[in-house]
Length: 300
Length: 186
Image 1 (tube, helix red, strand yellow):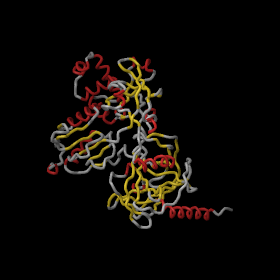
Image 2: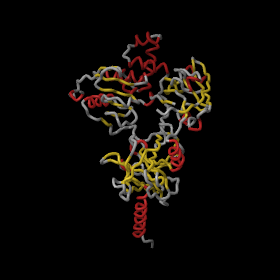
Image 3: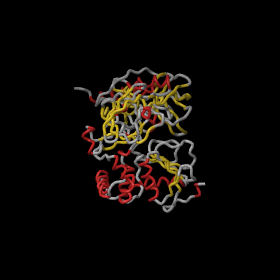
Image 4: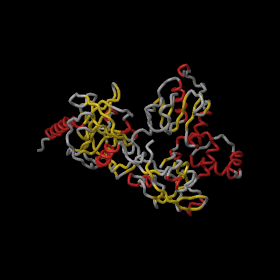
């Protein structure tokens, strides 16, 4: 007979062990007297956290499990992938981690920090996974990983591990407080760039677009029933230079329909800057096309 | 100072409106006027500021911001906040309170919206909706857009059907809350 009670005790002991080890992977980032969020120690001198929950400040105070307080300065922020990188004034003792992917149903342990920098733990499973996706700020996230775990506000930004101790990524809130993981693959791509350049470059067209239905008389010529109408253009932007005008209805970008915004966003990554793209559009009742040279999105 | 104002449902506020998108501006102006407020330009003296999207970080007047989270604005509502929420928030910040929306539907790290929807309006229908927001009658809309009254009625009917509304007031409220009127910058 299997000793079930003993299995459960072993499971619990393993979780206790993991939670103790997590003390060297987290930090409490103080926002005010009685409010903090969690940071994940990326390197001994680098902490990452959730961009959306960190106010704009020049300096933060971090509390780590040993009880010491370390000052840290933001080294880079990217709303696109929801990652902020903080550089610590003096290195802390970070453990090493091995990245993992995460499958539906796999156990997931999400750690946060309490106000004293000690680990807090949450246990659940990976609720859903999906392919790469784009955020509303235009950032590319390598995988969609959702957890069935509830987090306190103060626990956002902490590390998430699987049963084998593999690092799934950093926790953050999606709408309705669903907990989402910014996967390790995204962190590995974005964090080094943020450390080096302070920001992530995005491609830019300089247009403001609104989804519209293509007027019935034109739908056949256009080959689709919706498009994006140019509402305004940024003076001196690439779209103006290419002769795009307000009122144009953009149907496709490099042949990909604008019925999906991601078809545009996907073509405006950092590597797109300087490239040309073909816009197919409706102007004055006829379908025509223009070529736009992508430039870098201005920072403001 | 604004703290001297008293909270009251019949308080008329001077609201400086910052809304870069013309359709949203029309809708918000209509909503503010209907709530009894006076809409003024950003440069004019005002009790409160209503900013649709980005606002000037150096703004010193009490500000209600619609859209992305904001650490500075005294009032922060989701972009698709209801007419009543906007009115209540403006009255609250005018007397020095801080307003945050607990159910903020747009908080959290969100995926890109998708535009594909069977309810999308045509450019002409958007013109007509804008004119409705300006409070124009069908006859005046026909004159402004230089189309027949019959065509205007046809467009108005189509706008109402697509938005799922039955009155002009409902159309304005719906347009404010609907995601399809979002302008995306690339």
